[in-house]
Length: 213
Ligand code: SF4
Picture 1 (cartoon, helix red, strand yellow):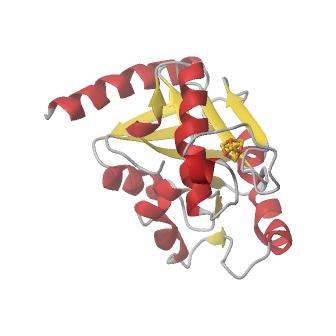
Picture 2: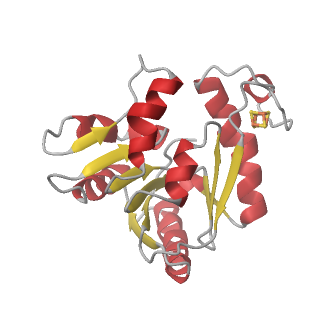
């Protein structure tokens, strides 16, 4: 095994052990493709499914794979939907789904999750509602501790997402967070997940490569 892959596998073993202490499940795959196959294989015929905004899933083709299934009910936002329409047709439906897919903006070696959200639909579903939450996460999202994780999210993930979403925020130009209160900010909610009240409801599928921001 390549040294970097071995390093990822070692980190993942530590994270999975610590997720278990927090009532969350963790699994690790060497590649994103294997991780996606596993995650998609969890969905059974008749299930209701939704997902939050995630580049990781997009890079792995998971959204298309879910859309191609005619044996499930999928609630997914389409480009023509306004936020209000998405709220009615997708975001509010996510709470009663069997499966909610997302990535995480960051994860610590201790198994804590850290996410930011503008509208709040993704972090709301992470906290409460869907029966199962499946988080597909590349090892680039791992940070040694919570402060490093927050710094990574604010100075790497959020500025990159602001560029992707064409947001008029300071970080989309400077590449670093300046604690803005811009109307375009994607940082309305900072959600730190340290434990799942329902054992195993949150499952983190780690992949030994870089995915998303
Ligand atoms: S608070 Fe503003 S500047 Fe900081 S990362 Fe979020 S959108 Fe960018």
